[in-house]
Image 1 (cartoon, rainbow, N blue to C red):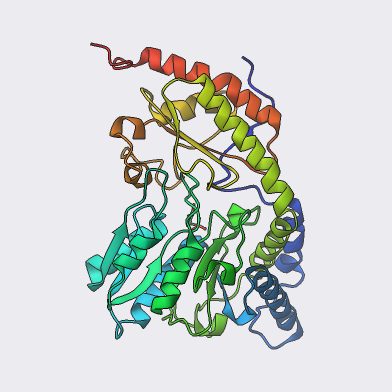
Image 2 (image 1 turned 120 degrees about the horizontal axis):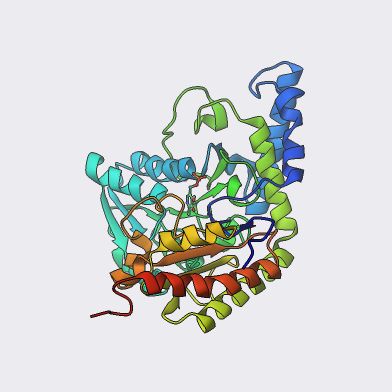
Length: 393
Ligand code: PLP
């Protein structure tokens, strides 16, 4: 089998290439309109205009008011600000937070720190085998001390989409703010905060063909939020630090492009995803789809395989010019199986053999067919080398 001449990139959940139109939108703000958006002179005012135009674009897409948009440095910062910000602003109301057991570490480690170092109590809700939180579990977990619920919109490893609006209805009825980490949903799902019934929502530009190092936190009006970063009065006093004008302009352009082409891109990519899933399940024995069969991100095809290590699959795919992941980019350096796969209740043996293939705008049917051609023999070869597979006595 010959290696294709171009890289087949199937790791769009980790990051995406910046769209050339986004680069173009950013360029003037590096060298021409480089003023500080807080300065009163005309270059400063021009920079301010660019930031406010971007804020309006983001607000329109979220169905929000511009004042409710906070620009941050990444999805991680947005998650941190949402959780720590609400927790510290609500100490007089209570000390209980509800989240799920499959959140990104930007959420889970923040909750763990609040528990360990600041005396908050956190409920980590279980998920079913397909990775879904039961909204009734959220309702049951609420106490008179609950100050925040944080449940991700779509999972970064297995792609499962959560019933956020149902959870939102429960949270709203009990008067508790709901945060959702929408970092993986940014390019493909509905982001209207009123449809989702959320009070806080995190986004990151590099997941939808924007630059790395810029994010958004949506904060519904009157949601309590203590700034975690103090300094100047930027972002209405909620996030100090000189605005990164080119990146903010890039984020807004990327979001606009994603919105414009959402329906057609999602449908095309979901068809490629289904071809990949069906093809691998049909040709590889002891191969299982992880996450929800239908309520999943249009670009996510994730699996576990018996008798192989995820890392070995990745290395073999890489040798053939295919870039993939064994889970989230953040946890793939760890020998421990991911907390997401263990929360699904998968046997430990299978958790070690995970593979996440995440498609993007530039992928084609030929890319999928190439993976369908090479992956069965990679798995077969690795299993033949394994002393334990199949359960060799
Ligand atoms: N939340 C989720 C679900 C993610 O997938 C990621 C990144 O992989 C993040 C948060 C963190 O975003 P960033 O890389 O912008 O810090």
